[in-house]
Length: 261
Ligand code: 48F
Image: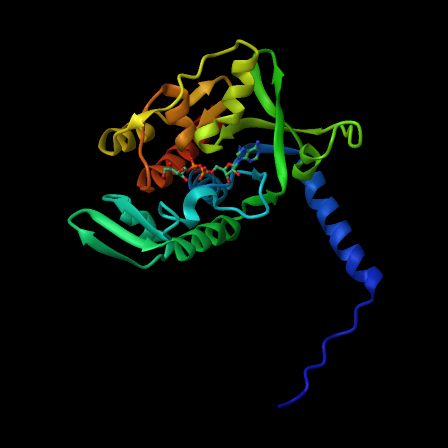
């Protein structure tokens, strides 16, 4: 076997490559058209669709990994289900799937999730991991950005790490934080709106309603995915993902229309 010779790069060059490239990009995204909070299936889908339409979009995710609940289908088993017509989205993403019964499709979680993350990146969305939403920016009763901090900061005792967060501005924010509806809750804490909380399981009803009610929930704030269910008190849907993908697409459409105005 031929020995492999890697090119020369010093320790300091490697450090500079990381620091300068990150700082340049971060500086660029201090202002965006749209900031998406949460990188599960709904947020990733919305980011892909927005970036494909030329919108400057930043997605922040508190975990090291993107994908939220999309890696696993349910009950720690990694087969995902979607119902028609959402198999078309799997097709668009190039995810292999099989029809289990009429209109019910099954795919591999890791395959589907990695394709969706790659599609968002390929489309030009900027993805930032290990960054958590701390608060919202509110100007004249309109959500105008997010307040963020590095995820590990919240795990440190306050007396050790009293580290102020920073703000990023945008025309629109999308809450894609799933069942917790974290952005919506920040407005609720201030008495600006009331989230109804999630209802009990009813998959057939829930999927249609989540997509139909993906909308601007507060001036400047669009909701998508399970955050819609938590905000409007819709039934939960359990381990099926078609509505998450379609709701992400709908959120992007709503955002594009608002940006055009
Ligand atoms: O939970 P998640 O996958 O939400 P979703 O896109 O999809 C829901 C389904 O996975 C499933 C379901 C229906 O099929 O019931 O649960 O609506 O992804 C939400 C993402 O938001 C991140 C979280 O880590 C996850 O990756 N997130 C939550 N809070 C914050 C956050 C926060 N404060 N800052 C940044 N990201």
